[in-house]
Length: 320
Image (cartoon, rainbow, N blue to C red; front, side, top):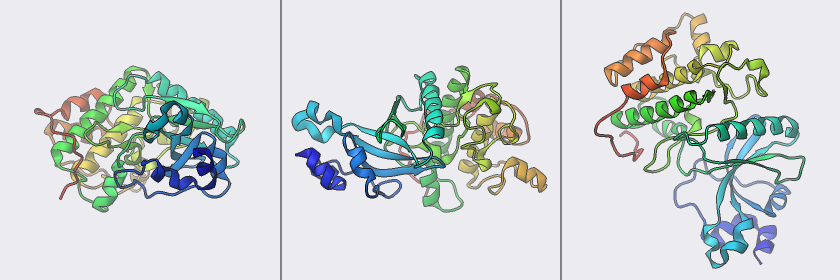
């Protein structure tokens, strides 16, 4: 019966099983079109599109294969984030997904990252997908958009705790010899009452790797949040992540991007220097100014600079 419902009208299955999201969707739900739904329906029921990239999109899906095991408890079907290749991108996507799954496996146990990544082929052997842990909540980019083009997205104490937890995640990755490579607001999920989750390991790499050896090279690079080394094609370095952390710290505490949305290289060419940071803990301000002036700092130093006692509750409420 359930399989016939899926084949005839997939979008309503969530309502039939009592699985409609309880919180407002981030972003608004977008259902798949036409023939793609039945192809996924043998196992995966797409609920909404979580994000769209250059070669793939990420869907929130239900795992229908669990129906037989759950019986009357079908309302607890597992949910996953499923990254699927766009049409015509299968060959490139397979190498990228394999690389991303390997990076997540190598980082297993690091706090604040996805806990599982498995390669799948929901549309047939020629169409790869990456199944990952699903986290419910807005991204930092969502909160920043809700606040407008400027202004801190949440109170200073909460921003400091966010930055402390992100620095802890990055420091642990660096200790494993890994670099995330694309730390930005859209890649940071804020689950209710939980630390931020750093997602999208498609641009992650081992420290010291020549970028010419990577399957993506400049794929996924976001210039306004990237370090000079990444923008210049230098070997992968902790500076790639730490520079992004400093840029985020400035944006969260000052309320605007330190280079008005320019990349570090673009700003240097235009003679536009980063503004001095005036808000936040003194030690953190000094670290941010040092990094944005070209200095080198370990992520662990940021972790200490943003540590607050007592630690505030992680409610992720927006600033008024």
